[in-house]
Amino acid sequence: MQTTPKILIAGGSVRAAAASAQRGGWQVIAYDQYGDLDLQESSIWQSLPAETENWSLDPTHVEHVQGWTYTGPFENWPADAVKFFEQADKCSIPLLGVTPQLLKRIRDPRFLQETFASIGGNPLAVILPGHFATSASRQATKVDPYQIQEWIRKPLHSGGGFNVRDVSQANITEESFHHSLDELEYLQENVHGVPQSCIFMASSSCVERIGWTEGLIGTPWGKYGYRGSVGPITVPPAIDELACSLANAIVKATGLSGILGIDGIRCDESWRPIEINPRYTASCEILEGTVGHPASLMDLHLRAWQSELMPPCFRDASATSGKKTAGGDHLQRPNFGCKQVVYAGEAFHAPDLRTLWLNSHALRSNQPAIPQAKLLPVIADIPIPGSLISSGYPVCTLFGWGSSIADARRQCAEHWSQLTTHFPELKLA
Image (cartoon, rainbow, N blue to C red; front, top):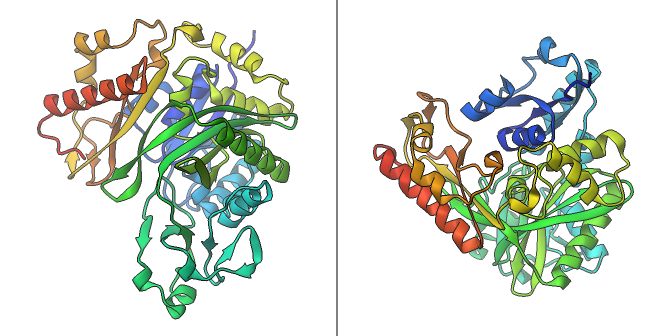
């Protein structure tokens, strides 16, 4: 009798990646920092402390595990990533993902911009601590910082737009420009536009574009903070081709497999990349929940790393993954989705947020008549009732689905309204 494959997933919040793996037929052991109610009910969960040097993998989790992988923001915890990798290696648990050493290279802002320049793109200027400003297209040439109209200051190890802030030209002097950068931050040329991201699936034989989404930004801790995603969206063919060329160049240079997410900024008719995420990203579940996309990107990701030889057409693999999903008929999924992260405006102890949707027939009637209810969540990342949520921290994630992006966003807004009406004591942001 065939046993269910088991995977260990580590990260800050792994709920979405765990749900994706489960749709692909995997049993999940989840190591994360939140331990949300819906994650604990569906997975074997263990708390992942902020620092890993004082703990080790639970021996009961090691048996029959086929591998481990990670989700965000694990790439921004380099020391922890190495420690986790070493502990898993001692237990003979293979990493189904990019190694910490390769991850460091991929996450170097210069690598992205230099790769983009190599395919004829218009790279963003970046300055790392102790370096002069350079353009990726002219690596040996210093860039006059005063030629760049605006800069933003970004942590080298931070995700979701956390602690990203504008830098005023008035504050840029020769001395401050070269000496005031913290060793763990850098400057990036600022461009104004709409955040748009593309998800790819890579193997040694091919790189296939899965789909595009648009980011929603603005949180209690900054205007660049990640608020959610809508999609899928359509971009001009020239931009799509440019992003595909970039993905192929990244894969050729690194040999990575599985999910590859590239975040960028759409400015008029151009698109300029800002970050690489070689793992399951926050926008993946919007694509998974909508028609025409694989129902389990995590299944494809894990299989790509297991075999390093994917079929020439990922549609065949995604169809297999879809058969493992309740209902299984991709054509019955909605066309568009929206997810929005709800943040706490002030600290409070969480009520049982499930009661609203468990008892609300009206909300269920608003959703399309689709058998795969698990593909169409209304709420996720549900906090444990009674747990303390600090001001500015995420509370939960709300979803909307529809025949257009406007419909999906409208339904998501309705769910927000019903949440605040049902729990008026909560101060949400």
